[in-house]
Length: 382
Image (cartoon, rainbow, N blue to C red):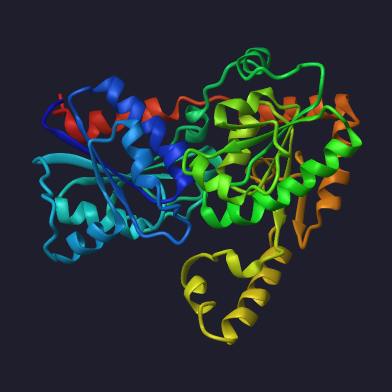
C-alpha cells in the first residue's frame, strides 16, 4: 500500500472536523504507509485555520487554496507538488468541480461522499457514497453506495459524569454550553451576544455554570479580544460539551455532533448583523456590489429564511422540529426566555436528548469508504 496517494478535497471547518477527520483516521489505521494529501479549495466560509487543523490530524501534504488555484492552472508555485503513479481522489465537501479537475490532472479515479449535495459530473466519478438508501435512490449512477452518516464517525466523548469531573464543574447546578462558531465573523457576533445572555441567566439562576466552547478553528487569543466581562465559568474545547444540560449553538455541523452525543440544544440564527454573514455561491459576490448589494442581501436572506423549514441538521434529517430553533433578528431576552423554558422541564430535555441521539444513530461509513476505495482503486483484481 506504500505506492498510493489518497487525495482528499474539502474546504470548510465543518467538513474538516466531521468528514476529513474520520477518513484520515481510518486511512492511517488501514494503510499506515499511504500518503494523504488534502486540497483546501476556495470557500467563503473558511476560517483561515483549516491548514493548521489538518496538520493536527496527521495529513501528509496540505495544499492551500492559493496554491491549488495556481497548480490547477499550470502556474508555477514555490512548493513541489509530486504525486505517485496511482491514487484516488475523494471529494468530502465544497464544489464537485474541484475534485473533477484534480482527478483529471492526476489521472486518478474520483470518488465522492455526498452529504446533501447534488450528484454531478457522473461520468467522472467512479462511485458516489451517500448517507442512506433514500439518497442513493435519487442518484442515477451505476455505482452508488449507502454507507451511513460519516459525521457520526467523528464523535468521541467521555460520559457526562467524567466530563464534569475533568472540568471541575458542579453536577448539582445547571450547566449550559454556548458555541459561538468556528469563523471569526461568527465569534465576533456571538461572543458579545452570549455574554449578555449569560449575564441574564445568572441573574435569574444564581450558580448556573456557563461554558463558552472553543472551536478547534478558533484560538483563545481571538476569544479574549471579544470578551468584555467574566460571564463564562469555563472557556474550553469541544470535549467539554458532554458536561452540559443544554447547548446553545448556531447552524452547522456542530448541531449534528451535539445531537449524536444526546445533548439537547437550542439552535439560534441571529440575523441582527446581516452584512457580516456570507451567502453561498455567486450570490456571495453579487451582494458585494456597492449600495445595491446590501438590498440584495436583505432580500436573499428573507427568501432563504422563508423557504428553509429547518436550519439544524438533526431537524432536517427528522423533517420535524426535534430541537427548537430561533431564527431572525434576535434579542438576548428571547434566547434567555427559551433557555429557561427548556431548563425548566428536565423530562422534556431528557426526551429531546434521547430522540436526538437515536435520530443520528451509529455509522461505520469511514471504514466502508476507505475499504472500498482501496479494493477498487489500489488492489489488483483477482
